[in-house]
Structures are given as C-alpha cells and as structure tokens.
Picture 1 (cartoon, rainbow, N blue to C red):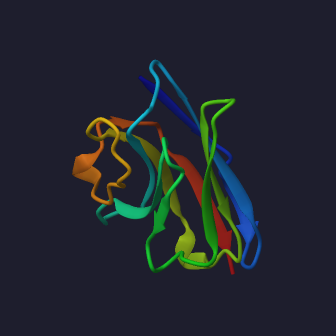
Picture 2 (cartoon, rainbow, N blue to C red; picture 1 turned 90 degrees about the vertical axis):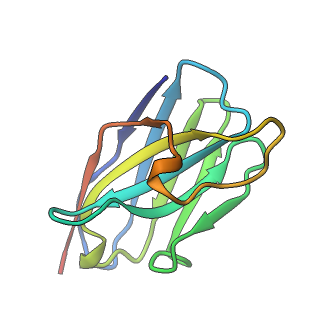
Picture 3 (cartoon, rainbow, N blue to C red; picture 1 turned 120 degrees about the vertical axis):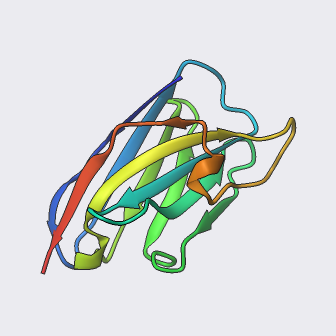
Length: 127
C-alpha cells in the first residue's frame, strides 16, 4: 500500500488549500482514510477521516465547518479541502489508511488505529 500526499504550501490566513492523498496497492473497501497533522514537539493530531465504502465523515472540533474530506473513487484519492485557514493550522499533514472489519461503516480517529501512512506535506498559514 502506498499513500502519497500532496498540495501543501504557504497561504495567508483566511485562505484555502486542497490536499490530495493518492492511494494505491489495494482496494480500500471498509477502510477509514484519515488526515492527521503534527507540529514540532507535539503528538500527531486527528484532523478528520472518511469511510471509503460509505463516504461518511467525521472531523476534529478544531476544523469542523472549515475543512471537508471527500473521496475521489475514480482516482483512488482522498481530498482535504481546507478553508478559512488559521495560523494554528500550520503543520505537516499526513494521510493514513486503517482497515476495518468487513462491511464496516465506521471511522477511526486514533493514529494507532491506522495501518498505513503517507509522507507528510507541509502547510504554512501566515498571519
């Protein structure tokens, strides 16, 4: 399994960015596809995730209403649309895939529930 995150960059506060995570190596039925972020000296923080089979989503309170996760099933990619960005959103963003039980419609929110990780992409929000 390979996960390739892209789309990071520098943006002013209030701006928008869209991150993409290209997934390959298997089908992702019953997988939770998540986004996490990390800043130096801190633990990896859950941002949000989508159940690949059912397209259900969940978000951390800190990004709810500003970030949207969607799945592009044709391209096997998970998208993270980030709007109204704040300086505190500055971090390295990681995508991850965690396998659930068969026909599962749930979502994982803990990093240790994810089996595969992509390399990070840096998002910097200037004030």
